[in-house]
Length: 90
Image (tube, rainbow, N blue to C red; front, top):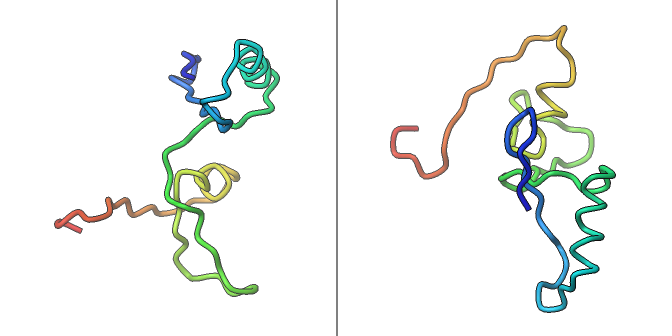
């Protein structure tokens, strides 16, 4: 589902079985979106996993971790290097 919002277009993905979709399930899905119970869909690589408490000096930021790692604290600065997988220029 796609919704136009003041912050741009918000997309939500239905995680249920499409073959069992009913009008009632669609209504419930929309109600859950409006209630804030469903996170918006963001194109993202999987969230990287780290072993134990060891964290790298440079952190890999993906779509799902952008707000958590970059936007959480306006008092701190960070440097971001953006690249695209399989890009011959990077």
